[in-house]
Image (cartoon, rainbow, N blue to C red; front, side):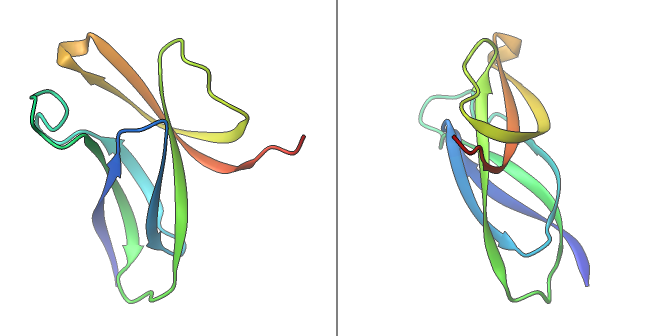
Length: 102
């Protein structure tokens, strides 16, 4: 049965999340003040439509880049932009589709 699930993603340049095969990413964002108070875990959340009966999983990779930061040598699919600290910091989240060939 299809349901919306939430997955934690670390707030790092590149983060990996194990998800059911064919999960459909809806968005990535913070929840509440999860990035704005000291002492709180440094993470974002992914919301995705998944088949909760799917047993096979796959590792999905995500690139988080601040405005003006290099994106790296990846093929990227844009997901969302997140503002933290009242909009003083802006980050753009992409799924890494595959590594580019040299």
